[in-house]
Image (tube, rainbow, N blue to C red; front, side):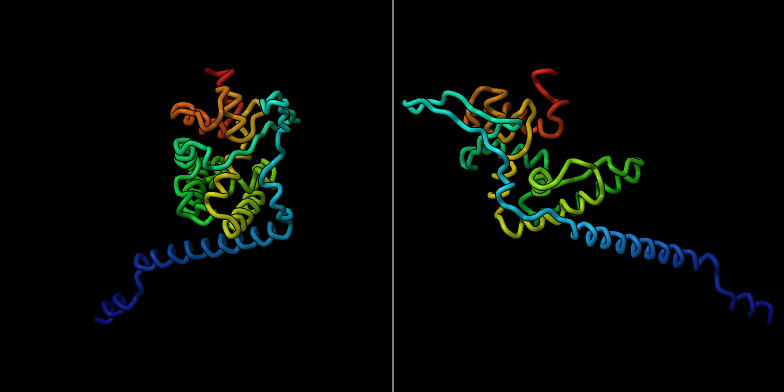
Length: 230
């Protein structure tokens, strides 16, 4: 009888394993959160100055004759002509949202679910820099204020600036700045220059197929260059 009671009083090793695993996962999550906070604190110390003028980029100088006809355009490395959002076809806006940031009109600058998915895929694939899951607002922040280097510090800065942009500007304003600043290859920056470079027309005249092509170019302007790879 005594032997049976002793057996019953001993804690079950099998039952303790779930608790150990849960504590281990909780500990790892806490360490990850601390590291993440440290990264953002470190990145925030060296953020570029918030200059609204940088959100538009360098513009092409347009030359007209005395009859108001466009004669030529002068630019350095970036051929860019700004265009208002009401001149951009809705098909082109929809194509960019579908391609780059499906939750653009729902989030506040950063798609944290998208980032979580990207981190998971990067960890499981072994390529920690494979996917970035940058929202349209983050891409605007990167093109206006940061470099294209692939580092965790740059990603943290990108997120902080994106949150700042969303607190200052409306979604339409952000979309307008984004469409006017992003590169399309062959020296074309912004949708107006891209429409003229690839189709010889004003952006407002683009059809659905042309909108689709332009929406795909920023992911790899050189790789998807239609002049080289029809």
